[in-house]
Length: 79
Length: 347
Image (cartoon, rainbow over all chains, first blue to last red; front, side):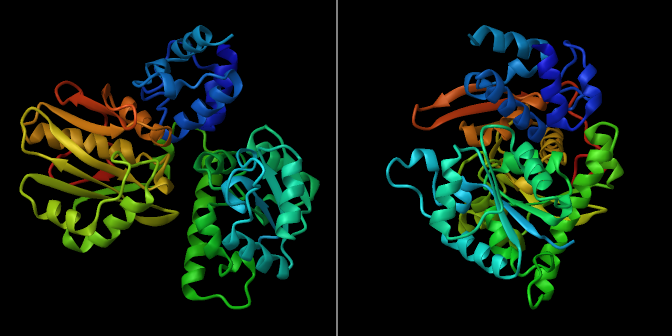
């Protein structure tokens, strides 16, 4: 799952180096700097691929803290 | 670069409505888009379809519009994959292709992965028959300027793809300038227009009339700031604004925050939030509050707020859910890059 999320993140940001991103690195921090455009593309692809609408269920978007929190959020809600 | 092929999305773009949601009353072609498409066909430009729909939708579109489509990619993949397949099938150069889609995120996704393509909203497309890229018989100066704006965007997109580094490093490389200034009465017409056109980036979810704007600009209990954006590729002019109630020391409240979607991904909203937090701190407020209508349309705003350290509490009613995002101004504030200038608060 984390591998799939890394791929989605790399595509949403256009940055291939994020394919190696650690699961505990803050997505909103200066390293990744997930902004509203990349973030929206990421959420849409997560919805498309895993059937989980994070934005709808998580007002504060805490699920997006790290790839690890996002993976756990998706796992708790899918299949 | 001359456009030789236009690739159309169907739902709410070439068609007035959503194919799968229309039941027995299939959506008719959008008359404006149809007129544009027919005009371009007469100039020898070909058309294709890229749509998240079953294949029958393309057949329906062909029959309903009377246009010939040289290729159709219907399915549920990423839009950029469909566009790339069409480009390969038709042996087109990517920069000879225009892509039209009402959905901002589809446009962003395709722009990322096919940066050479000219990516347009239906509103842009309505205007585009006059641009040099579409080989009109006569090109006006205004049309040339509009076409040039899109060429600028394409160049920026292409460089973004080739750039190795963080988004902020790319913004600096582009010589991005974000200028925040106090609004003046002369800004009112443009502010009103922005409030009408910004759907995804509008905390109030609605427009603000000119008299109301004039009232807050003149009001001692409010601050109204406008944001302008430019870089070495081009000048986008006024792309955002905010209205802030500044009377309370407990919290300054941002009653309206809005930004044009063409400024997305260029650090503007983050810059405005960082500047607002610093202004609130200097003004003696303990916190900055941003009430925000919660809808699927303004997810990008919520992302920017979450990214800048705001926390939300729910409110409103089931029909009009709102959230109050707030952030104390004590402690370390988000970075204000040196390419952002604004009155008062220094970086």
